[in-house]
Length: 487
Image 1 (cartoon, rainbow, N blue to C red):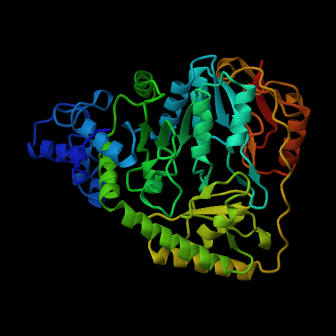
Image 2: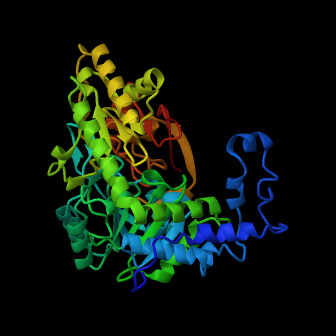
Image 3: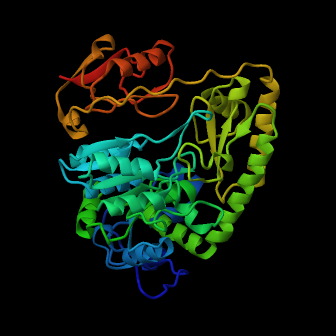
């Protein structure tokens, strides 16, 4: 990050593209649509022409993402100042590639890296690419809500006692549900053991702009952080950022890994949207995020007044390893009415035209951003009030079962991925090394990863879900009549 304060009112990449287009060049480069002229007319009639003029490539004005020296370099420096990093990198393959790059940077093939059991599947992809040996840390579980809780510093300390050669630790904070671990405490433990802390902060970019939200990971001592700017602020889908501090991170290695996981044809619409989203956050972020927080507080208060409907909040702090919560995430449950989260999501959309982000066995998740308005929230509240009237006499949902012991890892995820596999019947899978991940709902945490042996306890646990046709994420056969295993 630059020593002097930068002019955050600048939008260098946007300005460079505007200047380029003002020249109106005869165009003989990729992409082939030549601004708007090669775009389907039906599409142009709906959306207009100007946006297609931003879909360019590496021109003399627009810089090169993989060797940034001009407008992209300046745009990244502006973002670095805003997010308190030593260097910020624009990502056009989403936070998926950011997580992959962080795993690749943290540990070499055969070295140990700690991964939370509830990590996004991009962490598994990073393990497959790197060949690192994973040590899995189980987050606490909040059984009342059926949610993954946090990871505690004492859990991390215990992990290092058992695996003193661990090179780095990944933490997901905030989680999809807005649940935060004690990043500051975890960072202290990691650094004491000479390891780096890298955070999947896909859902937390807005936390840097409000003292009513949890602190961002970089502020709390994380060494690398990946963020989906498109998830919580104003950039386009698939555009993200990776922020790094270089006290412990090998800069050359990280940048080499980003070349490995990013497209060589970066989309300038995505890059420009990152530049403009940063501009909004730098110039108006506190006001914008404050509006989102207030709207979420209004929604939570109204929802919790509906009989049989609950919306989780700050009462979760201090339970199940939860250090803080992002209150712009509305975790809504109708479990007391006997309504599964999966069914609640379907009803909200089909009957009331309310689209939530996701559902699980007990809950749905609605995300409030600065772009929501009160009318959106009032429609959701009215829908939940009507659902409560319809299901007021139903029975509560049954509770989920405790997780079985973690199975033994026989080979690394990389070896499992490249090994010869075969498909066997579910009954034959007992005792075999799985080539697939399986995460049942509830609790939504994988009970087996590729490379782990299917124990009797895990098989019996999954059999109950399979027998009743419950939701299973990960296997190629979602009904789990068969499973891919290592030959």
